[in-house]
Length: 168
Image 1 (cartoon, one colour):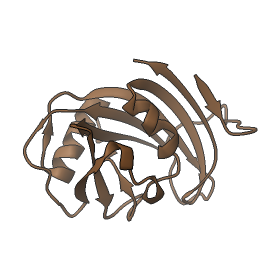
Image 2: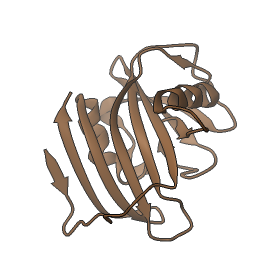
Image 3: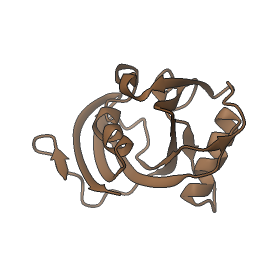
Image 4: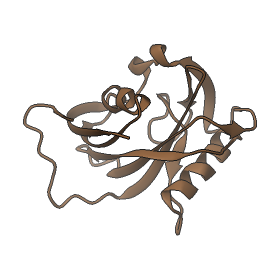
């Protein structure tokens, strides 16, 4: 399935400045989210994740970031999609983000200097506290759909997007 805002046109020669990851742990009808304390998106609710380190794969990156941000080890991560972000303001780098989902982990989610974790019922995800794009792709992912999406932002305001989903 394809969803677009009107007139969406992604730049043909686009390449990301940063490769990043996000993880969403879902179990027993709840999703593990964080209140991000610093960096891009500070103050927003999101999943844990972050930037690749040299030589890392997407999976290695997301597992490391979740361990650093929440002090847990995810045991069943699976990649669900890719998000591409372009920012018109010029102060935020272009980002390609690999998104993972899991249901199993060891340890107890704990607050760190980077993130404050909390569980939210899946039907009560606080989209109003998240990046605007999340409301477009996160529901599809929670239904088990894989996705690829492109978003253009001006600061934290979404200007345009394209989303393609498929059954897992």
